[in-house]
Image 1 (cartoon, helix red, strand yellow):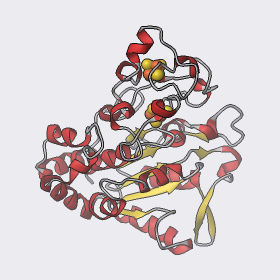
Image 2 (cartoon, rainbow, N blue to C red):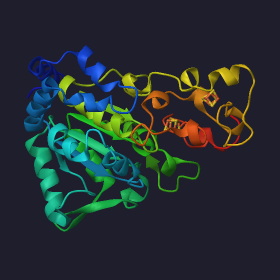
Image 3 (tube, protein in one colour):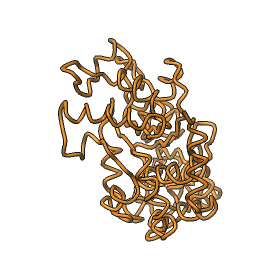
Length: 318
Ligand code: SF4
Ligand code: SF4
């Protein structure tokens, strides 16, 4: 059996798209460019090859479904294009038509058929308390399947795992102070269970749709992207928000905003956590390039491993 590294090397040989041109395509900085650039003919061809060999199975644990909603908000490319041309998404509890035991059996059938090749996208934390009974995701053979069961089985069979959102990457809100359910991130769950499948962390509460789509496209066409010390793709999470903020000059001059409606002064005293946060929101922007957190409020550091406890209270200075 070929290991994941060999499979990814084979994919890279067949795609014909250089790492450089791929990165250029996904690091777009403003409305109208960026992930939409992925739809150049070479990349479409590359992804069409991957569609046949590399399904993506998306499961949901302890979360609010906000990451899925963020993915569905992708405008350019449209979610229809994403689902039909970028991702062979063969299981997603929120958007698939199939349901109940039939859907669950299909999930396990695909995982077996594509063992070592499929990518498992995980949204939400994994509650390890009470034998996993806090989160039952379905039934197979009339027996309950907990998120813990699914992660042990599907996580071990997958070629790679995408941990999507704050809860799956670092525990997020379910693992915040109190954590009655034993909520655990994918990486910590794998460590505790001895599972060696490679993990790509795509944090955010929620993650930007470009981060999700771009990371999946990279995985399918070029393999595991370059990751930082926290397992995040450096292409999206390599730059500091504060160092690139349009209000940096105001910060350096000591011009501090006293209210959110201030259009130009620095928001550090209103609670901005930009200095401790690494993401490209300042140039990618949200809502199809319309605005971003620092335009309207503050950065609350939602992509960092210590979110939310280490970033709370959100509206007080760090
Ligand atoms: S608003 Fe936030 S990110 Fe921008 S300069 Fe001030 S502290 Fe830094
Ligand atoms: S600006 Fe900060 S809080 Fe807003 S999405 Fe980016 S990292 Fe998260």
